[in-house]
Length: 328
Image (cartoon, rainbow, N blue to C red; front, side):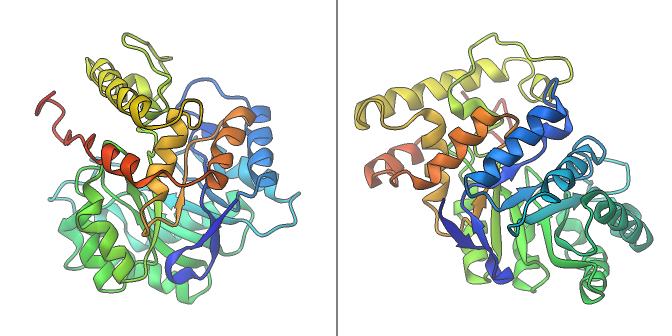
């Protein structure tokens, strides 16, 4: 496993981290035993960064992580997230910051996060979405600065709103953020334009989520496939989204077959190596829910970088689908 500095935190994090959404639920049936085994395997393979959140099973994910870490001696950096008070997701331009992230609520919620994780101080507390409407007066971040000074949290971050990731650039420039969590993958390459260069310029750590595009870029989905009713993907890939995505993945596979030696990289390997090729990236947090996935994902850090011609070819698969029906 290779390690990179997480921005101004000065913590060296594993290139491949542990995305802990699935072990909390929302991705179909999941046993705690499988989750614990997956976490231990990832840690044994050099992972020292875990990302979780309150909404991952209403704290279930955090509690499982705490149970595993109490038996581990090595230092593991744990990031968690506080969601806004119930309302529109993501917040609309008309939402008031003090209504969705009031300071009293933040303090109480973060105390719950600490309790679930079994720590006095959280390594990284991220707000679990944002709107650029709050950039002029980001009072929730001022509240987090107070908690940081008090030793309740070490570092501050935001998980980007899906369709307006550049909304965090101004906050990085003003020094509000230590870390950002970003969607970046073979399909979603827009962060390369401004967001990732800004992170480098301002020494902000970058956590990459959705590197597999909710699993599609592993190449394991088929047209017409159905997901469990409790599985987030049954909504994400609603209507004809899955079939259209599978078609796009097949185009990638066809290109890779032409330029990569056979049996050198899986589709999943390529998806992760593509993301790691960008110098702004600190760590990737693919979702891991069993030992097999832990082994497959962690080995990628030690694989050779993708050749430049492969990276350039993959750039052609950038898919501007912020509006899903804006073209096929």
